[in-house]
Amino acid sequence: DAGVIQSPRHEVTEMGQEVTLRCKPISGHDYLFWYRQTMMRGLELLIYFNNNVPIDDSGMPEDRFSAKMPNASFSTLKIQPSEPRDSAVYFCASSLNPGGNTEAFFGQGTRLTVV
Amino acid sequence: AQRVTQPEKLLSVFKGAPVELKCNYSYSGSPELFWYVQYSRQRLQLLLRHISRESIKGFTADLNKGETSFHLKKPFAQEEDSAMYYCALSDSGGSNYKLTFGKGTLLTVNP
Image 1 (cartoon, rainbow over the protein chains, first blue to last red):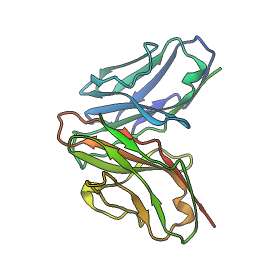
Image 2: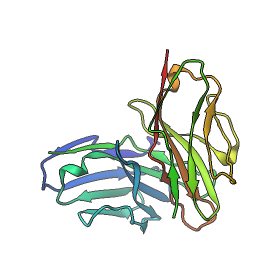
Image 3: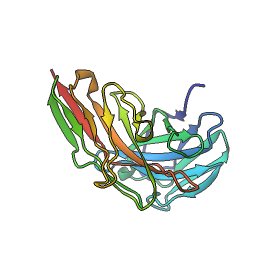
């Protein structure tokens, strides 16, 4: 398995445009997480899914942010409209069933720049 | 609510010196604690977890429930240990698995 795959690796967009980030989790993993990483706030959990169902989206900053998981092998994080303060690295991670031995595997992230 | 606090944003030590990265948590349930590391230009990866009571790359961390801490320690730091370190917490007793991270500590080991 190639691990968690995110695309694109880098995205530069103008303020007001729609941005879609994509994630392919590791096959067989039940959980998928979206995180945002910034210098000021560190690694923030935005939303996570269990078996394609959103469980907790309390970390999603605003209604401009939305996430979907139409099937077990694909998830998107959409920002519409984008703003300069959304500039960050967005990580996707996946893991197996919960428990102390569960490890979350991370993608390489998407570096988003909104100008 | 789950919360993880890493009080030091930056930590700089010399090669061979001991290093301790602090992590405190607040959680009313039964927590599982982890340390993740992010080396330059690499993806975030698991370093160690408290349930395994293991030592990885010379690092150890002991869960202290009385002090609600999970500090990461290494007796002799190496230059290759320079990285971003994140402490993380998950709920081991609930039906869902929410993994929450601290803000991270950037460790620099100087030659």
